[in-house]
Image (cartoon, rainbow, N blue to C red):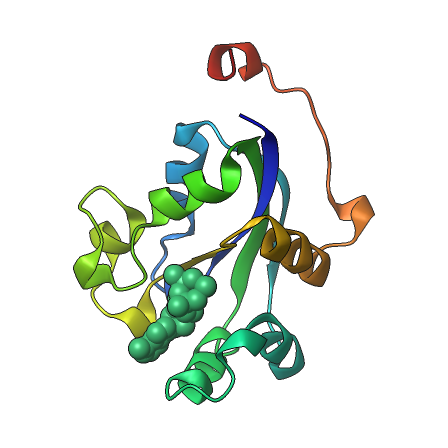
Amino acid sequence: MALERTLVIVKPDGVQRGLVGPIISRFEARGLKIVGMKLMQIDRDLAARHYAVHEGKPFYAGLIDYITSSPVVVMVLEGPGAIDIARRTMGATRPAEAQPGTIRADFGLEVGRNLVHGSDGPETARCEIDLYFTEDELISWPRADDRWVYE
Ligand code: IDP
Ligand code: MG
C-alpha cells in the first residue's frame, strides 16, 4: 500500500476534555507516524477555508463556531493507506453510528461534538496539510519501530 500523509485534528472538545493523549494514542498504537504536530487556535478565516465544502449547509455556522471556539491539536500522520486508516480509526461522522472501538464511538455522543477531523481523500489531504503546515514544519524521520510496523 502506498505511503500517504493525512491531516488529523483533535477538535476543541477533545482538547477541553483532556482527551488529546488518548486520541493521539489510538493513531500511534495503530502504527501511524506523526510527521507534524502543533497546538493552535483556528481563526474564522482558516475555518472557512477548511470547511468551504460545507458552506450553506444548516450546520455550517455552528461548525465554524465549534472549530474556532478553543485550541485544537493539528497533526500530519503518515503510513501505508494513512488517509483511510485514520478515518476508520476515527469512526463514522455521527458518534451514535460509529462502531465501538473507534474514537468517535468511544469518546463521543453527538455529531456536533465528534472530537476529531481526518482528511477524506488524497486531494483533500494535500490541500488540508498545506492549509495548516509549512514544508519545514513537517519532518520525515526513520522510526525505530518502522520494520516492525511495515513489511
Ligand atoms: P467528517 O468530519 O466525518 O468528514 P463531514 O460530513 O465532512 O464529516 O462534516 C464535517 C464536520 O461537520 C463533522 O465532523 C461535524 O463536526 C460537523 N457536522 C456534520 N454534520 C453535522 C450535523 O448534522 N450537525 C452538526 N454538525 C455536523
Ligand atoms: Mg469531511
